[in-house]
Image 1 (cartoon, rainbow, N blue to C red):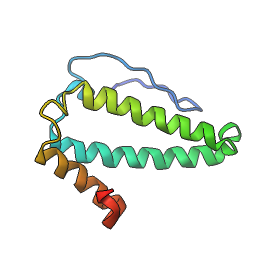
Image 2 (cartoon, one colour):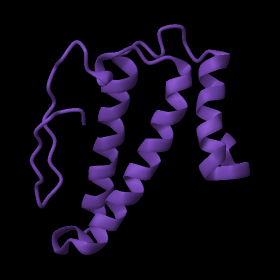
Image 3 (cartoon, rainbow, N blue to C red):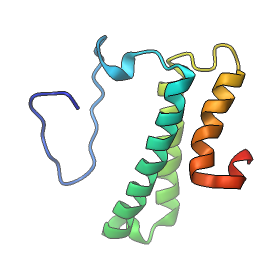
Image 4 (cartoon, rainbow, N blue to C red):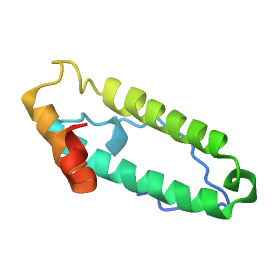
Amino acid sequence: MRAKVFVKTPQPFYIYRSSPDSQTSSKFPPERVTKFIENHICQLRRLDEFFAKDEFFRDNTELQYRVKSELLFNNDRYRFLRNDVYKDGITPELHRAVEEAFKKYFGADAVY
């Protein structure tokens, strides 16, 4: 997002570039986990808006679920596992970070 030049595309498109000074390459302490989860929930909501407008996805709930599942899986694998978020297991700090984000969106049901 800090590039001086960017391209606007009519459909969602992503290219991963490996850069040592990239924010996505930095370590992922528990305090960043909360923000990441919040951003991810918002991203999935925007994806639902896109699905509702796009003829190909609109009536294909199975494909919508597949896209969301892949997105969740890949973000967990690349963002959390790659950055050793779980290296010490589910620590109290990590648990609080996740709980904080979930409470904002799921209220009393956050525990589930």
